Length: 201
Image (cartoon, rainbow, N blue to C red):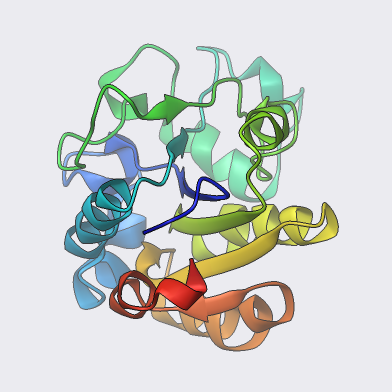
């Protein structure tokens, strides 16, 4: 049985990423399909919930004019703005219809950057619950997941990362991140291995 010291932190499980009609779905389609990501995410969520772990969602959202990005965004934020994705209050910014939800799930608001700790109450929520281990899954493998992972590592959390419950903009980027960067800041594990090994929890 999981202790209350472990939480599942889910990043950006939103319609714009996970639904075929989503504005950013085409960028992730290859990895989502090859890794069976949505099915694995739901298995992970259900298993974690049965073990008594808090389920925490950290969606990314922006105002209609994307003012959170500043006057001249570049990199991945420019891509998001160009696509018109993740606008607060829209269907695309909502947690995906395909994801297993429960009223007890915790929603962390005000994430408008890459690191889920930056500008949000994530750290406060985790510490208030006595969480010392976080389990990361979601999007994007080599961007928001990796950035949050590094931050959590520096904050002293024990970090587990779920290799088959994440997607990004291509298999090359996915593999480079999971194989070379994730092991530096976390303990990478498949969803089945995580749920099947109480020692990890």
